[in-house]
Structures are given as C-alpha cells and as structure tokens.
Length: 411
Image (cartoon, rainbow, N blue to C red; front, side, top):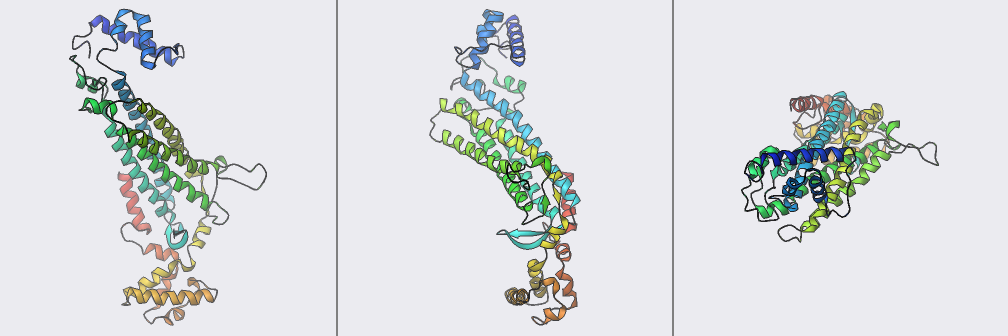
C-alpha cells in the first residue's frame, strides 16, 4: 500500500517484504534474537529489519502507530482463533447429534429441582445441549463478524496526513470493512468482550454438562459408567473411579468468567483513546482460549465413550413420574385441571402409603378416584407410552425428536 501511494519505491518495498519474510522464518525456526532493550515486538522486528536491509527498513513504520498496529494484530489473531472455536463447537454439537440418533428409544427421567419429574428420552436430553451449542456457535459467529473491521491507518488516535489507502489494506488482510472512527479504532475492545462473553457462556454450558454426567455416573444414579481413558483412580481407595476431566472443565469455568469480568473492569474507566491498561486484553483472551478450546475438544471425545445403562435409566423413569399424564387424561375427559390435580394427588398419596407405584395400579384402583378413567387409561402407566404421546413440537416423543434430528441434519 505504501508503494502504491508513492511513499515507498518499488525496490524499497521488495527489500522490506523480503526482509520481513526472512525475519518470519528466523522466528519460526527459533533463531531470532530478542533483546530486552527493544521496547516491544514491533521495535525488535524493525531493528532486525534495518540490520538486514539497511535504510529502507527505517521506513517500515511509516503511517502507523503501535496503537493501531496492536489493535490490528489482536483482531487478526482473534479472527483465526474464533474460526477454530467455531469448528470445535460444531464438532461437539455433531457428536451429540450422532449420539442422540442412537438413543431415540432410551427412556430416562427428566428432572426439575433435581427431583424426578417426567419421563423423557436420552436423545431429547442430549438435543437440549445441541440447542445450547447452536446458540453458542451463533454468538461466536457474531463475535467474528464484529472482529472483522480493520483499524490500521488510525495511527495513534487521529489518523495521518499521509495519503494512506486503508481500504486497500483491509481488502489485502481479508477484512470486510475499516473501523470508521480513528479514536474508536485504537481504543475499541468490544470485540474482545464479545468473544469473552460467548466463551464464558459456552464454558458454563460445558460445566452444566459436566455436572450432569458426574451425577449420572455416581453410584446413586448409575445411569452411565465413566470411560477409563477419561477418569482417574484414588491414591488411597482402590475402588474409586473419579471424573477428573469433568471436574476440571467445571472448575475452569471460573477462570473464563473471571476473564470476562476482568476485561469489563479494565474498560469501565478508560477515557478515549488508547491507554496502556489495554495491554491486559491479550492475557484475558489467551487464558480463555487455553481453557475453552481443550474443554470443547475433550468433551467431543468423551461423549462417545460414555457407557449408558438403559435399564437403570428406564427403571428410574417409572414410579410417580407419570402423574401428570393421568391428570391430563382426566382433563381430556372433561375434568377441570385443578380438580384433576387434586384427584391424582390423593391417588399418589394412597399408592405411596401402600408401598406401590403407579405401574402397579389396576383400572379399578384408578376408578375409585374418578369414574372418568376408562380401560385405556392403564396404557398411560408405562413410561414408553407417556413419552410417545408427547408429540407437541419441541417435545420428547421419538417421532418429534426424529423430525428435529432431520432439521438439524439439513442445517
């Protein structure tokens, strides 16, 4: 660009580009000698360039400031990293979709308040996380879009009197547009907050996922068994198999949330334009990526190796989890919902006092509480039938989940 607008001769441009390529090669091979006397990476490279090519190297910094240059560097870096994060989210999402296809008929209890509520399927449960990850991916894509503005040419804060072609540089670097205001260009870190916000929420989703698997693999639940590859033993108790990976993912969530809070705190009192406080932005970005990327990658590898106990899950989905189905049966047959709720409540209390579950009841037992019950009500008292009847859009019926899986497949 500097050559195009006449600020560099063609030969000077070729010397500078050749020298920078040589320096890049030295850095990649670990041969570049850094000197603590150099104020920063920019001056270190400029010093080496002058040593390699002489006077043309002194023109490298023409029309730029470290303020707009580091803003550009961070956008370029984060743009690449966001693409990698989006790919990792997509892979975990695809893993859960594949797993859901295998468990359309696997009945399990759904929970509210960590108490058994109503029967669902494992497929439906897994697709709840797919929906979360879909939103996560959308947020990272939005963060990438807002990162895609080119700040170079803003200088220290007020642009330049030189005839720079900012749009040419933006095109060459693959940016969709330039930052429109030079002061905003050097001081804006909203795109960092966008990334950290999306990262924190994704990490929260991974933490919730981890906690649920930890519960499922406990002896008290017994819904699944931990794979040996992703668990550790106890240094003292030979029988133990600990979900260390999941606990670490859960624990790292605090770091990523902390990175977001730290970045917001850095920005909250800054006047325009550039301030050295903004050096802290990179630590926050690096730390969040160091936690998030391995967590996404490992979780995608973990899920397919989790061994589910379908019988244990099915047994837990019975009992009193079908009470709402009975109440809704009465509603369909003309009973007001509040009255139906009271009738089934009395039925549950009587059944529990007798040491039975709903699946043990006969039609005579049901009719003692309401004559609205007909013989077909007995079919309700099976979890499979309950789930199959929940065909409302967004519900857990296998037929509904199949349709949703087809939609996800098309996307």
